[in-house]
Image (cartoon, rainbow, N blue to C red; front, side, top):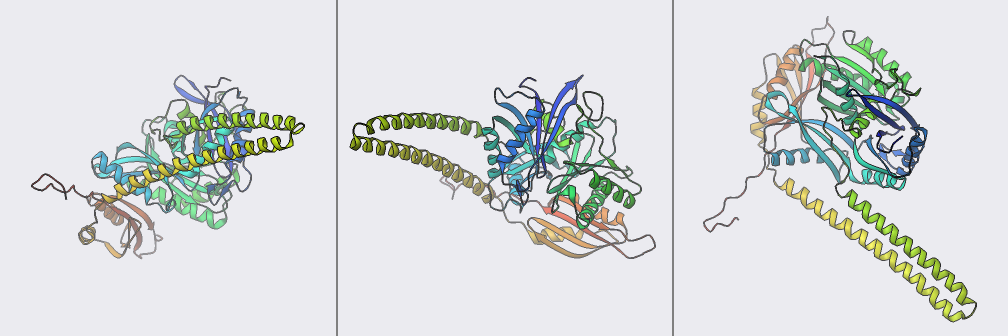
Length: 511
């Protein structure tokens, strides 16, 4: 197999999966696929902790797929975890600079990152409701991505592209559709420590959610399964409110071995949503024309999506690469350091040999030569460590300045006017009970006579220019015979404005 093969790899808390993709008549097909389980402890609390174990699993996968490693093999990696996420964000019309600052602030506000350094990318993805611009975003913890890149580089694998697991699955999901006017689709992907809910219609991604499930989504407890069922119902309700008159469908797949959990989930969800088509996700077409490639298990759609990116066929989902821009330069410097260290090691070997010879003839001279060799090795190590620390410190200071500049340009929001505007939009039949604001999100709870009244409230809020986003968070329907009001929860995000530049004075200077 040539080294330029399109290889996609997914990494999650349960296993590492590799897919080799080929393109025939303009359509991608799976040629071969393989899965390698990861030992317990590789992911700790949803975060990659042992990247070397991942590198060993990747080497075993390449060997099983019959790929030669006479030179470093390039591949695309889709990574799963609680600090590697993808989201669909809608923003009001703004300049590119304002949009970038708002997106950066949104991503920085996720509690999953706290004070960690974040690598993020964003790309336009069409137009949403009320003329808003839709963006696909990807973000990951810099330390975690760097740890994975270093381990795979030591294993002889050159990784040029890393993206979130959910983004790769969305790419395959939008490319699989063949109908002219397909229904809205909810794709549920059981990962290692998370379950992803992806909503798309045709080639447009509409919503990406991640739900943390303790113990692994493919081995969920009854309580975990109930929370996943509730999230699936919320996703179906979102499709119904967004596309009235169109029946959504639900496809379910496990990223690792979880067929029993998938079957139980499909059965339970079918009983709770009898008017919705719920089924196991269809397998990606194989080169042999069968559901499985090369006699192996059908690959996950996330692995197929990563391989599509490697083949240069991203489809409707843009490529959002989380590999740091300075990574090629770091690789070059690391190779130079390793070469220098090798030369130093060779010099030490020669010095030791000379020391042994001299010890036979002059003991005092031998001791001085040996001490000089040890000191040379110590000095070399200290110089390399100091250079690495200096590089890290300069990078950290530069990134801190960028974050501070971005946040200093955000003006306080007029909460009185904003809350009055939200209250004035309340339609008849809807009552507000409580409004809470936390981490940039306004949570509105209340009662409505019917579900249509609640959705009308959401549509009115979506047209409000003060808001960047308004969506139904939860809608509790009562039985048909029960006339109690319907409980609803709506999630909103106020639009943030940039601070205007100060006007120059008479002398032409700014204060």
